[in-house]
Every structure is written in C-alpha cells, then in structure tokens.
Length: 239
Image (spheres, rainbow, N blue to C red):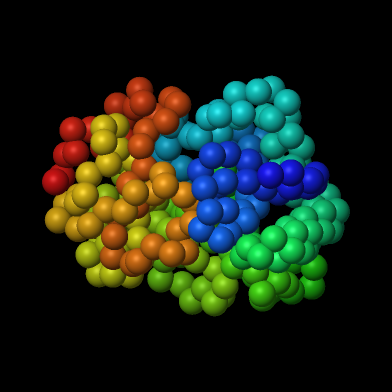
C-alpha cells in the first residue's frame, strides 16, 4: 500500500502495524530517539532492561538514515516546537483523509519509541493533540503507573508496559481490571500468565480492541532475545 510521504508519522511502517489494515485500521506512529539518546530524556521511566531491549534498532531501525531521521524529529520537538506541531498536525490530518478514503479508521501512536505524557502537552492552542483531533483515536504504551489511573481523554487508550522493576504495578493493573499490560516473552506466548489471560500482541498493534484485565504477550525481538535483566520473561516464569 502506497501511503505517500509524511514528515513525522511512519504509516504502516512495519509488518505489525500493517496487519491492522486487515482489521480496518490505518496506523501512524511517531518514532523519536528513545531514552536520553538525543540529549533530551523522552522515556522518564525507562529501565536498564528496557533500554537494552528497545525496539529502536529493530527492523529498519538498524539503518543510520532511520536513526538520523528519529534524531531530527526529536530535535524538532524540543528546539522548534511550533514547527513540530505544524508538521504533526498536517500528518495527522493527511492520515485521517487517506484512511477514510480507503474506508479505514485512523489510529495514531505518538510514543513509538518514547514515553511522553502527550495528553498533558499543549498542542496548537489545545490542551493536547487528543483535544486538537477529537475524531482521531490515539493510543500508546507507558511505564508510568500513575498515567494508568489518570483521567485520560476519551480518544486516548493506554497499555501499561511491564519491566524488570515494576512487577507489582503490572500485577495490580491486570488483577484489578484497571487496564491491560504488555509483557515480553523469550519463548512462545502462553495462553495465561500468573493466572490471567494473555492475548497475542504480535498479531497487530491495534491495542484499542483488547480487553482490560489481560496481559498482552509480545515475543522478544532483536536485542531483547539476549536480555537477562528480567525485562524478558523466560521459561514462562510466574505461570
């Protein structure tokens, strides 16, 4: 599918997001330089295991041109905020037009390789990008447990991400039905984990269709396959 050129959003840029098209969605993702690799920390809750296993270098991310592009976007966000907002607004509007022309629902994920509180970041005179585009469904993953209990915009869906140091919060979120939690497995994705159901998160990135109170199982990819920090679950421990 030829999705055209976008300044900031990567549209159906990998196999996982492309699978969403068959489910009726067209996905645009913003990829920044993760953690503090740009000089600005865009992942306040990143752990050592998370940094070592980051998907930033997965797939096309290994290419120097891709890394330079992500650094350019990050610098634009922090050094030329007005221009960043203008380009992002144009990309979201273009994505929405194209998706609807195809009969698809547009999805926007602003934290592809970051963990910024976009719902609290003013955007072109609005309280957030979500308020600026009320007809667009936004979604993200986060390691901030407090964000999971915040009053979020109605068009913003969050999935909590388990790491080697937030097990307590992850277990509580799933057990209470407060939300869903993404967890990375070294081996096959199980049907249950710690007594709770697991949905296969690798079938697509359309998290907005997942129930609450479940684990979202992801298979370790790239550098995550070598993880020994506890970020990646091995031998389905905890089952």
